[in-house]
Amino acid sequence: MRTILLAHVKRVVIKIGSGVISDKDGLELERIATLCEDVHTLRQRGYEVILVSSAAVAAGKADLGIVGKPHTIPLPLKQAAAAIGQSRLMRAYKDALRQHGLKAAQILLTRDDLANRRRYLNARNTLMTLLEYGIVPIINENDTVVIDEIRFGDNDNLSAMTTNLVEAQLLVILSDVDGLYSSDPRHNPDAKLISEVERITPEIEAMAGHEGTSLGTGGMTTKLKAAKRATLYGAGTAIINGRTPHNLLYLFDGHELGTYFLPARDPMAARKHWIAFTKKPKGKLILDDGAHKAVSERGKSLLPSGICQLDGSFERGDAVRLCDLNGDEFAKGVTNYNSTELDRIMGKKTKEIELILGYQYGDEVVHRDNMVINPNKE
Image (cartoon, rainbow, N blue to C red; front, side, top):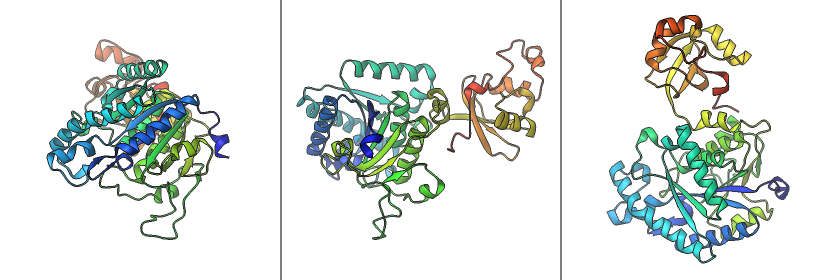
């Protein structure tokens, strides 16, 4: 059955967690070598492979005398550890891939790089060119310069965004656990591994724990979020144990291991997925009941007359949350007007826009083509 589910896959994103390739002493080079051997085999089988790899902080923190989980480390120290460790991480991949005649390319990203549409497309073109020339792209968050406002949060999230970016058909998350269990197997010996998930419901989400390992930033909760985002795009997602040698190949051989999340039956278009999950909202618009119903139920664009209130400072082209009168978000979209302009025209008729501003970018504040309803729900 698993072989049938993966039969259409040609391009795969593989996320490698810190707990898979590092321990308290730093990088586990033999484990990286084994994974790169598997990547070589997949390439020989005709797959295009993109890696999203954690472990830069884990590789560099020992030099600074740092112990503890990455999220407990002060930001300057974490960035310094990443600066030390990132070059070591890439050297390890470069050496391991070279044994099989493969070359690696480093891609360091922040959320800003993907939130800006032009930079997003530039990143996509770079990755496509690397794949065309047979290079293995290795992506990581640019931890040395990133701040909270432009963080992906974790590499699980980055891997889901990368899956959309490169239009991959499969996301594989290599973890230090076997997959999603019905409850935490560390505390419940009767916990059962969930082999297949058709749809990520609140009940499925409740099965996830909250704690990551001492080497990584994410737990099963972040992996479920990544799986949900990838499957909404239309890519299947597998969570498997990356510490078991050659599990990656066993997955592609059709073995029933880990947890496989089926792609959505009605996936989002790539641009709408980008709006929903990659662009970080800069503000909030409160809509009256009429506009709320027109946008959410009748598929209409948002006009200035339906806006009662705005919060935040944003520019034209930024993402904003669309909320009802109770302040509950029901949609997200890209605005045609900045917050200063919108403060002057909200509640007004479209024919008044040019009279008030002296110019007009369009009748719509948010066009329906640049809008996603319930972006955080399936």
